[in-house]
Amino acid sequence: MISCTQSDDQREFEKQAISLPENFTQTDNNGQIVDNNTDPDDWRIAPFFQGFVYMDEPPFPNALLSNQRLTINFFVTDTGALSGFRVLALYDRTTVKPVSPDMTVYSSLNTISLDPLDIAQFPQNPVGLYRIIIEDDRGNIISYGDIKIE
Image (cartoon, rainbow, N blue to C red; front, top):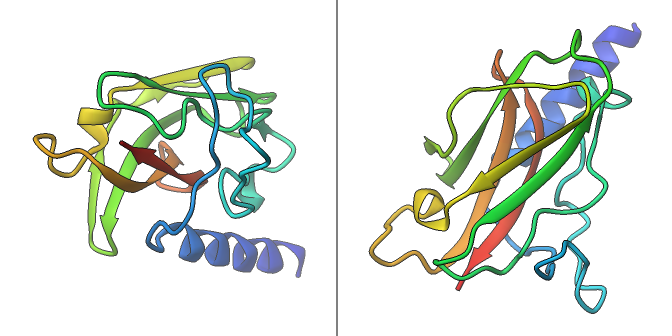
């Protein structure tokens, strides 16, 4: 019964993850939230990964310029629960693009640095709000959130 509930919770989380971006948590260049401007939907950890994966700060900077890099930090406490991950950008409910290579997970701090031009659907005009999804090497969504490129 517990695993059924956890599976249902994970499916609901993943359903929310593939919705279009609406808001974003604004952060400065050091990862500090600006003026309490947060989106409570951003950067939650999926039920399958709670207790194993943590995000102490949202990605930064957010919003970012096209000549900056987005930094995403997360901690993994048990690499048995998670061996690899990748980052995707969701443009609509059917268009998803990998924006990072498949990466190995470390049982400590894991840092992802992304170029906004790789995130943007149209790099010649990157301005917009984008849904970023972090998934494991089996396709399970770990976390998601929205970033803005100005």
